[in-house]
Length: 352
Image (cartoon, rainbow, N blue to C red; front, top):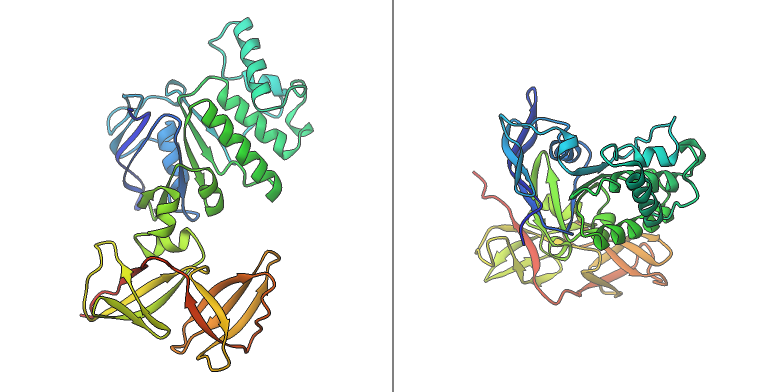
């Protein structure tokens, strides 16, 4: 199956600031790719390059096998078959819902416009709101109108720039599920930009973690969570701590035990230091009056309790326990690994 979208070694600078640094990616029909990263890492700039709102400095962008951008060529946004939903929705305040949605259908005849309008308002469940203006709609309804307007011209690729950030938490979940269903049922290749890892995990076929204009890792959600290639990816994809160890006979020897580990280049190394990635679910906390670790803080979260445990080395680990855990600060405890496989480890560079 061919790629709908290809970015090949795409680079973009603003003065001395390198916003996009040699990024390559592809997108298959019906696939949802999330770009996950902190503010300022280049996520929106990448979307704007794909959409044609920005000119690239190096590389090329192809959509359905057609070259849209390189250092000397730039196809305008309206000729790319790309739809973009902005964070602020960007609805025209002086136009009704119907007029907003129909805005991009100028090449259609009046009967075709009416038919397509009817299709998309039913698709995103806003039938009956066609004559209202944006200020008369709730945030969720405005989001649906923005989505309908983008879907109306039948784009081959959709670009979503943090589209749920202005909604409350419950509405975000509902809209995310509905949008995913619409995109999948219409086989639309989509790039979804977010800084929310839960959204990225929930909606994506693949996730690309961006860091300072580069993609650190691109993989399936499960793989990128379980096997991050860098400490930055570890932190972007979930709560984590790092447990220091010494490499001895193929294991990492730490203050709370000896563990098997795996690094990006496989299990190797003798001597030297390593940092093991620890997620909150990786250790059970057991009350032990003779234990060498101690609960420092306890945070009840309703469906779970998060404990911060200080181990003999002075390091602290966050551990997730059931909501009814009775452990309190000051409790002496032992930590029992729940991992069935190896811990992911990051080797420390040898001192010069």
